[in-house]
Image (cartoon, rainbow, N blue to C red; front, side):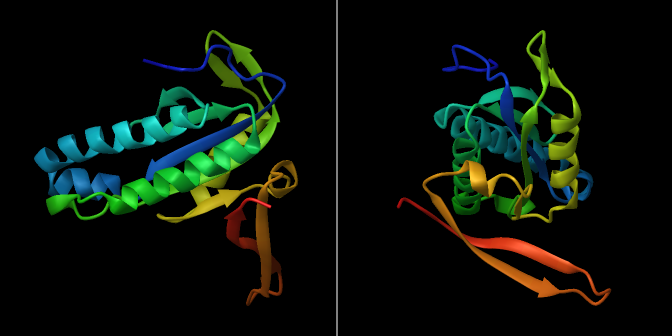
Length: 173
């Protein structure tokens, strides 16, 4: 059931979370029977964490989720919680299910329980560049997250560009 525990869908500036299981096509080809149970367990874990942090599951995307949050810090807490819970799970023959996560905030159009617009598209694109086990957030997210403190790291890439990472996060003041 979509949005259990969420009485009003987020509107205005919304924080979107997209998740995806890395390597799921290969896992389905190699372990089709085991993946049925593994995906069902993944879905329960991720949905419980999203809804437990006040998020709304907009839709599932095969082996991932599209979720919306009213507050960026809840979206980050849900992403971290999902990664930790998935990491603690015993997956059996499939091995660990590693999930990539992308997070972005912005305005979006809400229509018939679904969201549309640039912010949604950007969150999906951010997720697509993550590797399994990573949570990548857009540049504006940390400033929206009072109570989450980041240690910013940066490094020079071989092509001369600079990459910034909020590599370590801690919750609280």
